[in-house]
Each structure stands twice: as C-alpha cells, then as structure tokens.
View (spheres, rainbow, N blue to C red):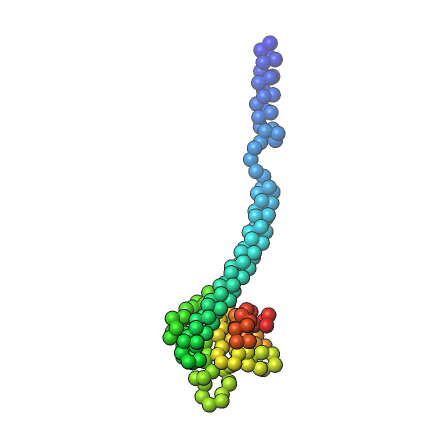
Length: 169
C-alpha cells in the first residue's frame, strides 16, 4: 500500500508541472497581443487626429460666421463703413491653429490695387468689400485659392454666402 501511495503522490507532482496546468503566457502569445494592440492604437490615433482636425475646421467656420455678423452689424450702425481692423469690433481672436484671423478691408487698399485680395480659380475676387479667412492648419496662404498654400484655408466668399474650406469652394 505504501508503494501505491508514493506512486499516486509522484503522478500528482508530475501532473502539476505538466503543460496542462501552466497558467502563464508564452512569448508567442505576448508578441501577438503587442502586435494587435499596436495596430489598434495606430488606427485609433488616425481616427482621433482626423476628428480633431474636423472639429478645428468647424470651429473656424463658426468663428468666421460670428466675425462676419459683427462686421455687418458695425457696417449697418456706421453709415455703411467697414471697420479698419477686427480689433475695432472686439473680434481680434485667434483661429484654432493659434493664428489671428485675416481681415482685409478693400477700402484701405491704395488706389485701385487688388493685389492681396483673395481670388477664385478664375482669378475673380471672392468678395466685393472685404476678405475674412483663416490660414488653416499649415498657417500659410496665397491670394489665389488655386495655390497649394491656400487649399486648407477656411474662407468667406460671395460676401458671406459661403463659409468653408477653400478646396471645397
């Protein structure tokens, strides 16, 4: 009987060290988990970055609409004159990318100069009295919307009838 008892004890000890009872992770399982986590993190970051950029663009569109309304209110209260700057109407705020909104009152241009006026793909001015826009994420802009630096700008065109991305105009 003692022989039978020691044999049972040995089989119990050996079965505790067998692969069936091992509860740890193998190197292959760890590598698979890390690889899957990396792929998911990359996809999530891309989606998050895209959502943040869309939110910034939406905020810029809203800001430009609000500034346009303030300019029009000023114009109606001041004999059809436009403010000389956004500071004059308390709208000298920064866009979502940390740059001030650009405002150009055409009445302040020397003579009949239309050099810095924003223009569409046919080189026709976007507005008749003033330009209002954000330089967008790249913080660069050029007069014609066809310029690469202007494609990501958020613009006001058709005297306020359009406010949105330059590339969509």
